[in-house]
Image (cartoon, protein in one colour):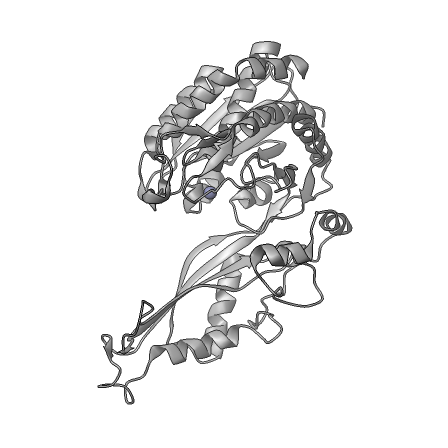
Length: 452
Ligand SMILES: [Zn+2]
């Protein structure tokens, strides 16, 4: 790898300038700002390094532009599918940024810009790794396919249908993704799965409009009592979700997964202190990581009704809105969980409340002892000069399930972002050195995976 690493070092400034060009192009999927232009820019940059690239309109309501790339290498036996996303989160609140969100600025060895770490800086590392290998070696040891998602930040609503309809195009032996953050200690992470999600909204209304709580209070019902009565049925006193069948399909961690969890550095006291907590929630007999990786949740994300501002307002609210996310684990199925939620509501006599399904994500998991695991661990060690931490599952959600469950391609995620990347927040940033290490890591991963 020495030649390739040297090539990366001697071109680092140019790589950074090109990343800046990509970062300057807004691509806010939730607002439909610049996504199409960003797809064209990215596709051009991929073509420039020698990747055959196409922009594939995905159909549906917004017809979002997926960027697909392919690089076939003579003699290569393995094909690696790279997943990444080039859309970004909105930038508000603007006044909280120390430099404009789409003007990449270096401070303290970090690139500050929306999308720097999530995910353009990480995605672009793969592209520059290809360039460095082609310049030094002439060809790659693996075939590569690139699936760059234009809608990850809004839940990839078009991806499943599109991949299902075009499955042959995406066939590969293994899949690789870099997103998210490294450990706070600076150690890299390999993640083999993610939780799913079933996000619902519940509305309840009594009167036509908000009313004076003195003039009307008494005969007029307050919708909050009804809503709270319902919410109280969702969980027992031990923190277990009380919906019939909710836990039916979950599977306990394997021996390898238990071992990996035991090796994740964790200090309960300092984590409690870090979060300002006195205790952790949920069943007593279960560890912190098992609750995050192998247990589903039912979480009240928001509750809106009446007046919550300064001082008093004597109001009798007419309506209440509640948002709930259920983080799901293998093998829970989001539509099935939604059905169970709905049945629970009916059985307990709350079918007067209005229930809406907002989004779903399936949980995903690649076995931690899959042969690709060793190859990627070895690559990550070389590039980051540090022993990686293995996460059987991460707590959040992403679209991996379409790759590992539908296309049947094992997928591993190696985050290149710094732990304090402030993704989705003002002053998002990526440590410059991690961008370079990321390029080296991707290049090394391609070689290690070719030997599978
Ligand atoms: Zn994100």
